[in-house]
Length: 297
Image 1 (cartoon, rainbow, N blue to C red):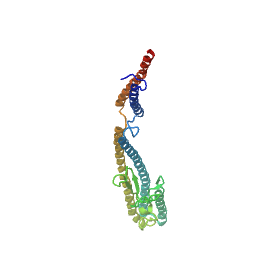
Image 2: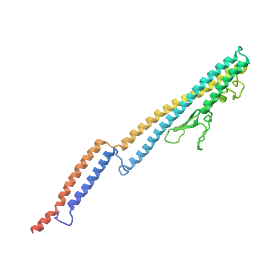
Image 3: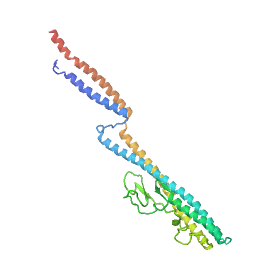
């Protein structure tokens, strides 16, 4: 190569090599400092798209776990209230048994019936007052088999959503809770039939025994349904957590940096950068040789 002064080709080559090595060093530094192999779309456009889709599914699944846990808390609230209702029904049956015997007169039966009606009123109050986050659970609002979610306050059975999509077979299911008011159970003055309305006479007290038994069975069916749903939600949570963990592992394989590999690249780029810098210094000094020839001449 001729000794020239207008263009320093050696310096230009060293500069290009320095830029390349420095870019690699910058990428390695960025990846090691962030812990991510993909920091921009330029690093891996397809990998970035896959990673972001996985991240959205992971976040959605984790929210689904929280949704299911909230539903379990709601079911436990309803079951706790029904446990108190159970105590009231047992007391009502005890009172009916007391009024059914012939050793009490009419005045005494009316006194017994007053407590009976008080228990029925308390059952209705419990059903009307039991709510979870403003959603009333036992007053019949959730007993309808038809769900309407097209209004601000959905009606009918409750939809619990936990999946990443909107498929009825995999992403949500419904919770339906029966009416647990005294009238729905068929006891107290609000009952539809004669049986269970009152124990003010011996005959009514005898009829009430069977009706209260039916009420206890109806209440137990509601509690059994709540228990089955709670177990189902627990299994759903386990499955969602496994899905989230597996997706997190897959996302990590795509996105996270391999520190050992990247550190090797970092050291390599660092050495190349230092070497290119040193050679650029030498290349910049080569034109001085021409100046020495000129001065010497």
